[in-house]
Amino acid sequence: MKLVRNRRRGFSLIELLVVIAIILVIVAIAIPKMDAALANAREMAAIGHVRTILTAQTQYASQYGKFAERLSQLGPPASGGTGPDGANLISGDLAGGRKSGFLFQLSVAGEGYAIQAVPAVFGGTGRRTFYSDQTMVIRQNWGGEPATAQSPEIP
Image (cartoon, rainbow, N blue to C red; front, side, top):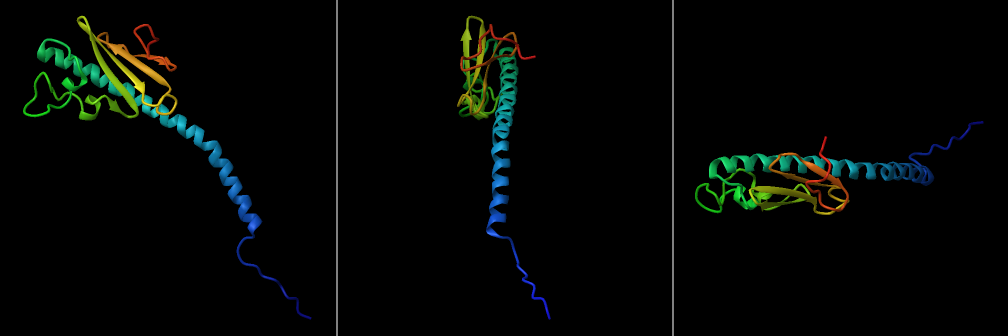
């Protein structure tokens, strides 16, 4: 007497559902960590952009005898060659005040200046705000309030 073996090919529906459920659990665990890593990368980029603006302000002051009053003065010229209204020291998008998920603002006070960097979407594109001035010390605030000259320094 011959035994008839049932050969089945492929996977059953239940086996496929179990595999999909495991994959969904892994994805659910990984997404929050990925969001935090992306926010951290944007914050590091924002710190780098603040340093770029600090350097550009120093170069601008040495060329024109005063600090730039607007980010656009540090950026590329609108037309013609470089000058006090377009020194071409920073990129055009940074001169526009928005880059890497952060909003940058330059203000002049007396003989100094201040740079603020805040996330475009707090908690989404960043969790910290940054501040610096002519002292070239970058300060941070963990919270929705913009960092100020009294905020702690970045170590």
